[in-house]
Amino acid sequence: MSTPPTKLENLTESLQRYLGLQQAQTVKEEDITADALARLHGARGDVSQLQRLWEDPGEVGPDLVDGWNEREHRPALVALQRVLGVSLAVKWNRQGHPDSFLPFAPTFVASRKVSTIYRELGRSVVDGLWGRPGFEEVRKGVAARAAEWGQHHPLALVLAPLCPRSKGSDGKSSEKAHLAEVIESDASLHTWVDSVVAEDWRAWLQASARLSVDEQVETMTGLVCLHLHVALLRRLAVAEGVVPCFFVVVEGQQIDPMCARAASNIFSFWRDRAEDALGLVAQHAIANAAATDLALKSALEAGDWTTPRLWATLDIRGGAPSRRSTSEYQQYVKEAIEARAAAGAPPAAGEVHQIVVQALQRAFTGPSRVAAKVKDHLRLYGRAAGIVGPDDGARKRYQLDERALNLLARLHAMRSPDHVRSDEEDKMSVEALLDDIFERYGIIVTIDRDRIHRALGASSQKSIIQRLRLLFPGEERMRHNRANLERRLDDLRFVRRYSDASAVIHIA
Image 1: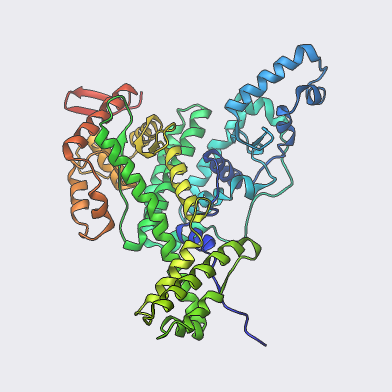
Image 2: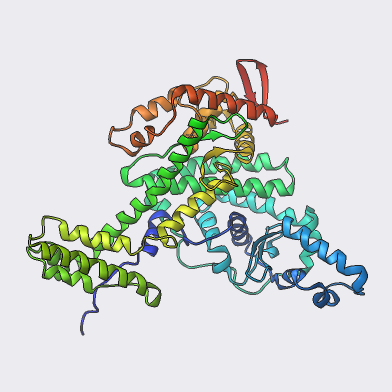
């Protein structure tokens, strides 16, 4: 029996597995929460009748409204479309009809096109973030809290009858989620999930008891995306074995332009790490191919440019969808080898390896390719968590907005003092909050804190953290940023002030 020809790994799949992304495709942040809750509850709905509310009122009105009266009911149905478009619909299709909805009831989560609409990212949450041993209490608590929404939210009470529980797909899979696999294999990441993520969700369960259903959905989505953002950063940095951090400018009228520029450069720095990760999995793919085929391995070490041409004959796995990538890879290898052969010099040590790695990486680089989608996910998670903005600006930066301040302050107020990662005597002080959000998420408002100074100072001169540190604004600028944080917390009434120099986190 002949051995099947060697094929190169598809880097879209490889990079997703390496970073713990289920599908590096466009998604809405609320859909991540919806898919997670549907998996947690084991329930989805047939939303086809609900979607009909957005069709022409004259056509669907008689089916949806008892005793339909065109003159009387049409204006009401049109007004309902507008209201629901703002308060319930999440994602829209090309026909102008909603594809997905906020999960005020489990049956608002569609059972059809699960993979297309939700991109299976609920698996990253349920199997990954909430799937660790010891998380049973968290899963039960979150499921119970979300189950209350359908009993109290007016839209759920009114519209749930239009969305019967479906017998269709529940989105379950026999395979482990990519993030679950990564957490298991990455000791630093699973330690972070088992401590920080678990503590955060216990704090959220306490904090959310005081919130409305809409606020619960918003803060749940924000916390899910904060954890996904930090988990992705940790994987983007894992090649150098460091814990990521980032400077954030505090949103407000008194933003320092140097702080804003630094926060933008730092966000760009982390986004660009997606290209580095793509290069890393390309190296792994070439090494794996060479390990399974002695001829390919020999071609990497050849003393002429004839044998290396063998690498230009390889296909990339994935069938028809990978044809474009295969063509681009083969063309680059051929052109690069022909150019070097024409120059007359034999291959230098490692030169053939460099050519095929670059060729494979380039075949998956571009505006709609996997590395670009990874950058989109980093921005999406950060925006939902309130740590990336502004919403209306073309160039994004790390920025704490009202959503993030609301979430972080509420979580901090509910923490046990033993869980606050700070040396401050008063664990509810703003100083303790600054220490804690750095230790948990890598968020830096100012480096004028001993813990942050020690962490940054302990890094190797060649490490990613030291390269990142060069992008930070000056210390005086960061002190201004820290003062802006206190002003914003004051505006939002999240602090109780005992004196000009003493303020503690307090939720009325």
